[in-house]
Image (tube, rainbow, N blue to C red; front, side, top):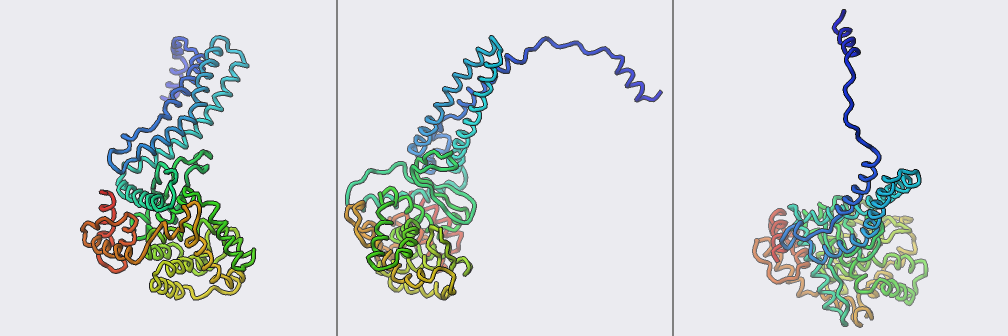
Length: 439
């Protein structure tokens, strides 16, 4: 007989193992559903500031409190659901009748879906705050300080006292091509349509390692300033009124009004940071001619070809005529003129007049929301400010203290330092973040 047959015969003849002690299944399982829900609900705990670092790079108390308040509101239903689950589990264990069992598993299903939705929000902020424990923390707190500097300049510069928005913008890193922002108190899909409690500034990694491209911070902050200064309705209204008064056709007016938020962000960012911000904008929009000349009938960004011309017009109005001409010449050398049919002929034929009118409407007309001031009066960047930026560029390149210049001016300083080859790129990057992070 083969060994395999002997083994099979021995196995067949062996007595069955003795049964273990009787272990009930249903009652423990019913109790476990209530226990699991209770522990999962408690696991979505409030955040504490200490768990994300103790230095200036950590989220502020205001950021932590805002998120915890939102999470507390979302947990109310879960806490009530946990109490109902315990009651249903107790009743079903005493009398496991079908209606009671069905009610319990139905509640479990609904609670599970609710937990997943809240957990997604909790995880979103856990990742954002957790970046402040990484080696990128000095970069992010530097961008926070630039954003805060913009807000302080805006709310000090307006002509009337306004409610102070809090908490301030919060920066975080993402991979990808472009930066983005999520404004205060708008519903976010990634938060399950919950209201975002404070402005978020999303910055690509490739921008952070090249700080001379961070003019994007001023652009994204300006989106939030348009909202927090109360200009969301008055700016598009001012653009439409000015274009109509200038005699431009309604079809043209509608396009420029649709572009109002992105145009405002470009104009505001330039007023905040000066001429070097135009170079940063060129980094973003200087792509293939097919992209630069393309017209999107539903787009919210001005056609790239025209977008740069808006900035050169504002530079001229700010008193930087020579800089405006240099940027214009460089842009026209790269992109001489769009081909016929690239975008609507009436947009192109009226562009020069429309650009002058839109820049004037946004930057050089008073707004009641600004206390009767013009945006160019709230953000006053003149030749003397550019001299400060140039001095800071030399100090930044040399590794010495750039002095008392506003945080936002260091973006322009980094740009001048890299353009003029005052130091190696890594030296400029290291000094940029070192000087901002220690403020």
